[in-house]
Length: 65
Image (cartoon, rainbow, N blue to C red):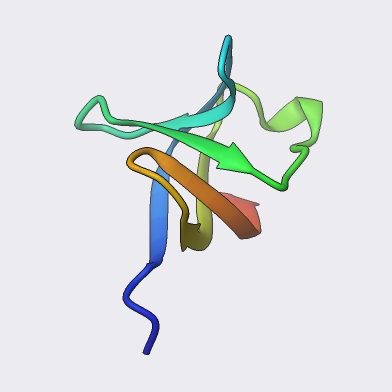
């Protein structure tokens, strides 16, 4: 099992650093290799992928909750 894989849920936002998920705890995860649909912004989503930095996730899958 790859320990760098992670599943994150929270509100999808467009931030100055790019697309990001803001978790309930207030953590910000910047998403890489994904371009979400406009109707997902502001909604609760789940993303799954590989952690590639302290707060970056290379997304394999993104879906609305």
